[in-house]
Length: 68
Image (cartoon, rainbow, N blue to C red; front, side, top):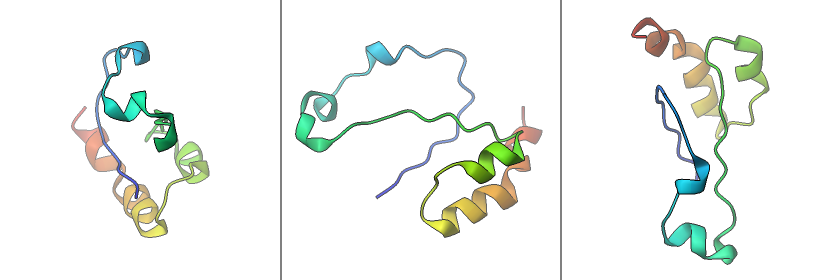
């Protein structure tokens, strides 16, 4: 299962992340991946799944940028 979040991040300290999912190594890892919506090539090269979600994000990427 994949979850995607769109945010305008002002700052981030990954060391401050907490929760049971970070304490249990058998659950895998939780990596933050930044994808710049302004860069179509970066977005095209991003490993986003499922393909339908990637297509939706690529098609609609300008909408959140217009709000910036």
